[in-house]
Amino acid sequence: MISLPFRKKATTVGLDIGSSLIKMIEIDNSGKTPRIVHFGMNRLLPEAIVEGEIMDRNLVIDGIRECMEQAGITSTEVVSAVSGRAVIVKKVVMDKMAPEDAQEAIFWEAEQHVPFDIDDVCLDFQILREDIGANQMEVLLVAAKKDMINTHASLIKDAQLTPRIIDVDSFAVQNCFETNRRRMEEVNGDTESDESSGGSGKVVGLVNIGGDVTNINIIQGSSPHFTRDISIGTRIFIENLQKQMGIGYEDAQKVISGDMEGMDGIKVREVVKKSSEDLSLGIERSVSFLKAAGDADKIDEVVLSGGGAHIPFLREILSEKHGMDFTVHNPLDGIDFEEGVFGEYESDLDRIAPLLTVGIGLALRKAGK
Image 1 (cartoon, one colour):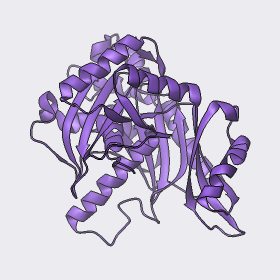
Image 2 (image 1 turned 30 degrees about the horizontal axis):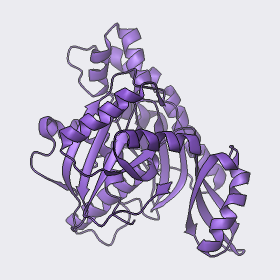
Image 3 (image 1 turned 90 degrees about the vertical axis):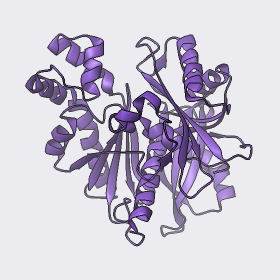
Image 4 (image 1 turned 135 degrees about the vertical axis):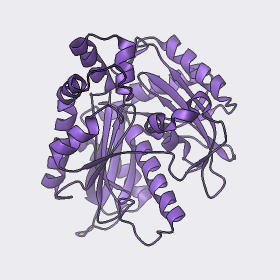
């Protein structure tokens, strides 16, 4: 969305500002294998960000600075991302033309597809297929409200950092997923098959469940078929667990992270199943859209990430509901990291790993890319 020149250096810092957690990850991209050299994670108070809206800027700014200090990061240039209803991602078909000509034409095209005043949005695009016949090409259009971008950039600047790139959460998830699969194929010597990386024959749904927003990105190969954000996240699961089970916020939060100690498993499953209905509907509508657009008949695999990836019973409930395989993403697959870089979380990496997907995807952005 916003891209400014990087100074020449080997590392990139990803800053993921979530509703409940701030994550900062610095990755050295100079070698063949990406290497995490610094990591910090800081929990925000529940009132800091509510339903994606920043309610207390000072709390968030302080949280960013504390996270940076905890991580030992000295670079002030970061890559961050936005998501939510103020972001529109859409595939469009337009007359075939050179990229430099498309830069001008995309504004006219966007007016037909973006439900906001064109003067109020930041626009970007990527040509997906240069020739689809009839002298036309397929383009990925990305639009985000300027006030949201400016607010996000201002927040980062107030934390005394420089936002070199502001990306989209779902693209960061895709970047992380594709890097992990590609690296694991290289490690396993499977360089001929593109099946496991979501290649041309496999449709993969990437579902990143955050605190207030879930990003759904359905891809085939490296091309997104359908991308949308829905206003559902772990907050609704936490609230329902509190109400239905009579437990406090901290205990409900533990359950969401997979800690079931002392809990009634049957009751937890009931609450999770009820709470997941809107999420399930969002996935169902995504599949329906794919079919209607003629892009694909089904999704072959759904990969969960984010803070909701380890919600007890959720993976099984969704698998049963949709009749497809749901797995949990490990963004550390095929990525090296410095010994002790995760500090207190070192012994609990399996649980926290899905939380790092967006941050790692952002930090994998090499300078100039």
